[in-house]
Image (cartoon, rainbow, N blue to C red; front, side, top):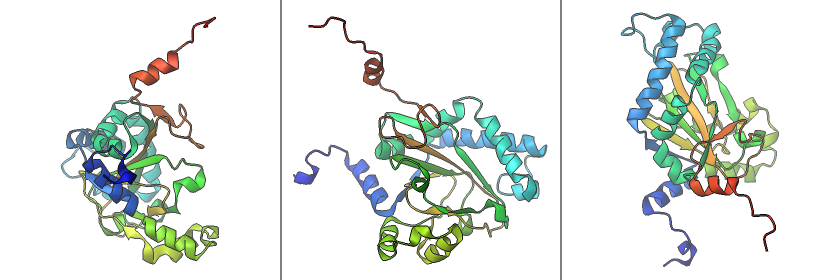
Length: 269
């Protein structure tokens, strides 16, 4: 037995997924489709209500740019978020749709982001660009896992891009001034090393948000839709995003519950 593994009791499937995640900075897995379908239905229902669409056979998420202007896109995003976060059914479906990979990479006693993020990127809309960044540069705990779900097939410029772990380490080693650049300067500096990740509806992207990532201009003929939500081990360190404010506990185990409620007997000898 490898002595380095003697106290690592993870199963082989989990070790394989973990190795890929560590090497690349991300991994793609299949979603549990019964829950993903419910997530998409909730978002479609709110979208159709906002744009007052009656003929649902003609319009869908991919051609949303035919029914919404660039100026109204943020109003649409906020309207959908207000609708889907009114109760925890959306969060429950999100967790169960990605449960296997979350447990493999993050554990099974978890906290979940209260308000997952919704991205709607219309074709040729400059305002939808998400500048290159790493979440940990702005007070986010490195113990978090980002579960990113496309609601349409994403190819080419519709994809999320990321700087893989080895490339990030190499570029930081080459230049200590890298993080002093503006977002535009940093993107131009790293562009040739970035990886755009093709992904289909029905798949999940789990990625390390401590690596630089973002969205470029959507140059395709379809609208990009995706949801992202952060998970973390309940007992791992929190930075600026606190438990009870930004995160909520979702799978608190019995020993933790009993320990939290424990009161030591008075006058114990």
